[in-house]
Image (cartoon, rainbow, N blue to C red; front, side):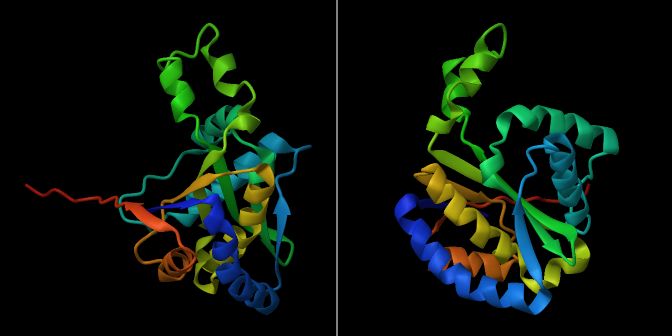
Length: 203
């Protein structure tokens, strides 16, 4: 699913998330940290590798190769906002990550999808003025997925989004089986706007 929320909903969403997230933090000794700007590329690769491993048991998921992870990390280096990326640690090990991307779609339409020769500059120029984000990845390693740690990540991201001045946010994809995250978003006022389905066609 995809959920949509506007800035007025974020405090309500956090109010619902925080008590649960605090209990999970205390129970499992979990902590969050920002994206390491000094080791930006390596940290993005780490976040993407967590994304890769976290979805191995998801039907239809095709994992990225190591080279694909490195290639995507290099591309995201220019698109990501470090302040909107959070890592999750348990016992000093990074086991989860969440990051949001500014919604570049209106700018992509303005440049007609053409990045060269100057489209790329127009795309990234003053990206801090973009006030809509898509939370595209909230992932936890498989061996930690039954602990509710994704809520800790979302709880850490929401105040950062508010500080950045975000006015709208889309949370996707949220799995249908992830009742804890779905319930927290819905109780906070977020609305389900999209449903994604994968079908297996057999002849």
